[in-house]
Length: 370
Image 1 (tube, one colour):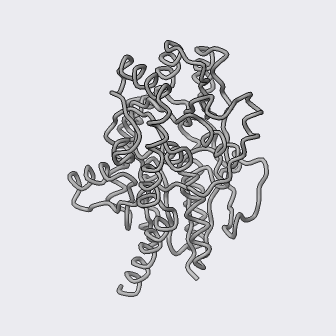
Image 2 (cartoon, one colour):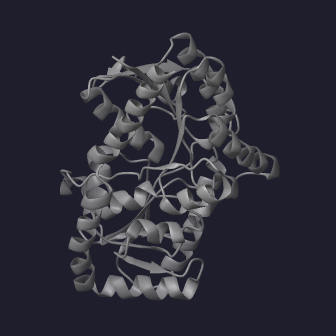
Image 3 (tube, helix red, strand yellow):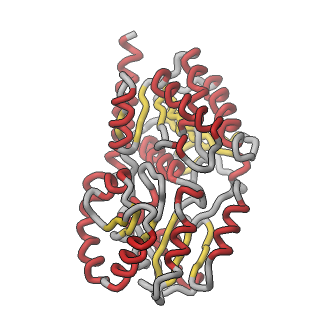
C-alpha cells in the first residue's frame, strides 16, 4: 500500500480556505481507493485533535503563528517528518512552500506540487515576498515530479514560460448538499432575503468595494459576508466598521450551515481584483446556481458562459448589474439549471481525485523503470 503524505495547508477537517477543502475532498477519496493517506495539520489551528478523519491519518505539528512564518515553519517540520517516515509520494500545496522541494530531491521522494494562482501579485505582500514567491515558481517547475494548476489560463501561462508544462486539474464542487432553512434563524435571515459573499478578508477580494456599492442601491435584501482573517484582525475590523445593520458578518462558517446560507441566498456576489480558480465561486455555482462576479479572465474561465459578470473595479457597472439581478429573479432562476450542468461536467470531485491517482500510478511506474 502506497503512503501518500499531503502537506502545506492548515489541515482537515476543512476550516479555512479552498486548499483545505480540496485536500479533504481528495484525501478521503484516496483512502477509499486503498491508499495510506496522511494529512499534516497545524497544531495551533485545531483545538480538537483527532488521530484520523474518514480513514485519513492526521499528523499535528506546531508552527510559528505570524503572517510570514505560520505556513513555512509548519511546512518545514512536515517535510522533515515526511522524509524521516519515508512517504512514497508527497503532495505539497502552496507555491510559498516550494522552496523546500530540493530536500525531497535529496532523498528521492517524488512530489506533486499544487501551486496557487499568481500569488505574488497579491496586495498583502511586500516586494521581497513577491520576489520570493516568483523565485518559488521556478523551484516548483524544476524540482516537482509533477506540478498542478487548477485554472487553464494559469496552465497556459506556465506552458509559455517553462519547457516543463503543468498538469491541469481543476478545483471541484459538491452539488449533493442537505441545506436546512432553520440555519437562517441564527442570523435573522429569510429565504431569498439576502445576497452572499464568501472568502478571506484580504484587499484583493474587494470587500470594501462590495460594501460601499451595496449601500448605494435601494434594496431590502441584506448582505451576508462570510469569512474573516485570522492574521490581520485590524483589516477585518476596518471592514466591519464600514457597514450598517443590513450587513451581517457570520465569521467563518462551514458544513451544513455554510451550505444553507449559500443555498437560500438570492445569489452569490464577489468583487475581486485578483483570482485564480475561486473555490467559493465554485461552491456558489454548485449550491446556489447563480453568481455575479468581476469579469476577471479566471472567473470567466470558471463560469464557462454561465451566471453574470461586471467590469472589474467599475462602481457604476457593478451597482447597475446588482440592482438589475435583484429585481429580475426570473432570469436568475433560468440560469441555475445551466450552471448545474457545467458543475457536473467539469468540477466533479470523484473525477478530480482520479486525476491525482493517475499521477500516483505514473510515478509508481517511473520508480520501477529506474
